[in-house]
Length: 501
Figure 1 (tube, helix red, strand yellow):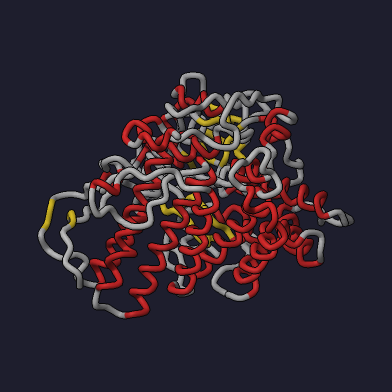
Figure 2: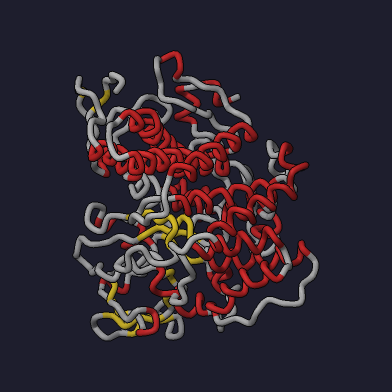
């Protein structure tokens, strides 16, 4: 085992919030002269430490949720929300935006921790299969983080190994082509090392295949819209190849494994008490006790109900929920795009509850002015009870079906994939479309409904060059700047001036 001097890892959510600059060496805790990791348990703890960044308030549990959804037609926010959220909603965000700054920073924290796994766990004397799995997870997490960064910011610094000296701290921006090459290389390493076993809140070979499918789909579509997505010119001549690769890896998920499958019960997909559901390929598991009433799942998307608990209709789960802050508000025009017969509209949006004092709060009687989403509610949460959290679905089986449909077009395979989604929604089958672009447009619309509020729609709008068409043309919004790439945060540029070039 090579000799290393590192900081002892503190496995706590707070640790993710106390890091130094996102591109600098992290400060994990107190300095220790002992070698680490020493044992299989140590090795696994380094992987868990990397995952622990995801559910923090600075990342998926709040700030990154704003980054991913406020700039679309899905959400708006209450009038006294932070300026950064209003700027995202009004498409005037810039390098000073606190939410995009947090998304940038936390992605690099994951990268730093993943690199520690990749560089050090191979030297641990332990079961070879388990060691390979852990290293594979490191490669996956690094790839996923760079994939988030390149889709949000475009060109970013590409750190391929841990800092060896301060001279290595200030990297220039890499090309988008180089970043994607690195992402795909990491994912191929991940799939070669990981197994098929399901571990709650962790990734495996299936997740690597699913993310590869998604990445190739992004490249295929972005390569057709380089007028809006400069930097993807390299993909323009390989569109067919990328669609074929997206279909290849999607088929691996759908046809070549039995670990995951389609879930016919929409409501159960989003219940945190149903662990490792059939569709949950990669889900971020938020703590139900550590974050408490501050997290997205517990309060930000739920109405106030005059500070009372309220009970949902039986078909939506029939459980009681605590009052919320009404901070993040469903855009009514977006909600209205769903067909009234769509089960996703009927089961996954709250429009009626009975409060503790037996008052009915509903859109029909005017006590609610808009619906609220049910995807992130915790059935265990009550007013005044510090229990709140849910799983944030990053990759679902349904998303892979829609990736396959878009990639192969109006073939029997494509129709079968998209119609499984529509049948569960209670909608008639899609049929009779022979034009491939028209079919892909229908699949895009299905993705918009199916994956709403699940960290996907902004990326779909960008890769398909649809920001203007959808936000301006359909929803009468104004795109001021930075529609397709957010600006690299000023805090990073101040520490590394090369990022401003």
